[in-house]
Image 1 (cartoon, helix red, strand yellow):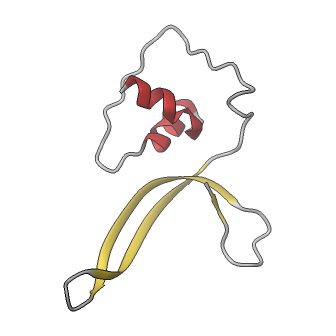
Image 2: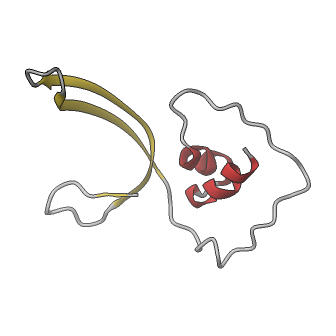
Length: 94
């Protein structure tokens, strides 16, 4: 994703959303949440060649990663392969 802070931002911050937590701070009379505070963790990544332009063959070894609560496929793909767009092959192997 690209994160842009303010109108004067010169360049977007290219990142992966690693974690989101929420806390509801206001509720209507029926108990339905109407306001929340979100805390996010973003991790910067550098754009590389488009995944279609790269040869996506992996070495002849298997990687094992044990997912933790709050992990996203995008973050795991970035951590393991350096490319958040590799989440689809991970999802297919799941």
